[in-house]
Amino acid sequence: MSFFKLLTITFLSLFVIACGDNTSKKKNNFSIKTNALKNAIANNKTLEVGLNNPKNFTVKSVNYTLNDKPINANTNLSAFKLGKFPIKATINYNDGETETAVQNISILSATSPKVYNYEIINTYPHDITSYTQGLEFYNGELYESTGQLGKSKLRKLDYKNGTVLENVDLDKDYFGEGLTVLNDNIYQLTWQKGTGFVYDVKTFKKTSSFKYGKSKEGWGLCNDKTNLYKSDGTERIWTLNSETLAETDNIQVYTHKGKIGRLNELEWIDGKIYANIYQRDGVVIINPKNGATEAVVDFSPLKKEVKQHKDLDVLNGIAYNPETKTIFVTGKHWNKLFEVKITE
Image 1 (tube, helix red, strand yellow):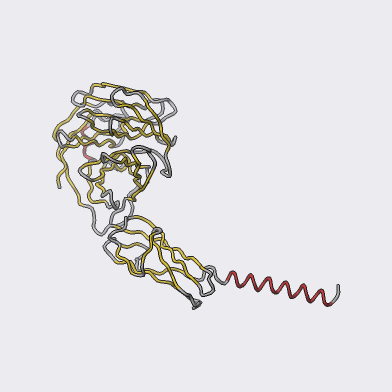
Image 2 (cartoon, one colour):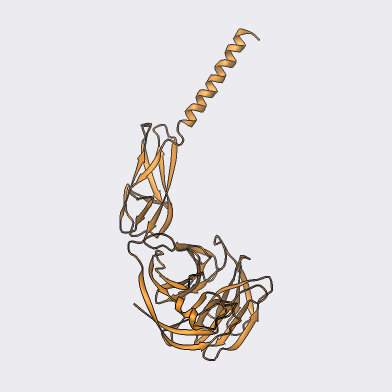
């Protein structure tokens, strides 16, 4: 090889390396700094955002977003939902190139949940074989969805005496979950199949089915007379369009300390979402706009009031009766349905 060719190859190699260095120079040079202690901040605070620039690069401008919404270096968080979200900083260089830095933060409730009590008003019989998943009143009658493979059902009940007025057995491959009733349609979830069913409330005939979107599983359902709300066993509650059943939005349920997971059966009561926490025998009362846990109710003493047997399981099933303005609760394989009044 001639000296000229060797010199040319060496020069080209150095040029490629130099270009590579120039490209990598503008990656991972910045990190985001905030006033969030351990990356958590209350929603009544002002979020302060800035850049760590250890190499002292000169930049033209920086744009910040929180959950993909533009924010300033100082942003009041009162209008934001609670939950874990990414802060993104887009750094613009003078030569037109950009770099992005990301930092997750958790927005917490500014107040701790209130603790509510309850008073038992009446007790009614409940089918002890029912693995209760969903419970809801509609036009004065009680509807129930039950679980377990090969045992899942959809029912209409006379709650005062426990009589089954209508019954549909699900296919043995489906594990029944929560339900809600809106505009003469019964919506029933199944657990891990990613499928829900729609029935005519008057005939109990299945009219259609629907698939879930980003939500992981089917757990609980309720409605506000316009939209449906769906839990999936995490801290998220998803908003579903009642006509298309597409997931349009979601909230993350948080307290002043962190998230509340395993949200299960849901009920809409006076503008709030009441949710069972699976395996906790309690109910949380949630602000549906931002996900704040406003109150908790400990129903664990009720489990001692029902028949004790080997299949007895946790509290699950909460329904509001607008005619009596009282709440009805039961559990999986409980022989009683309790009518209660919640008080502060």
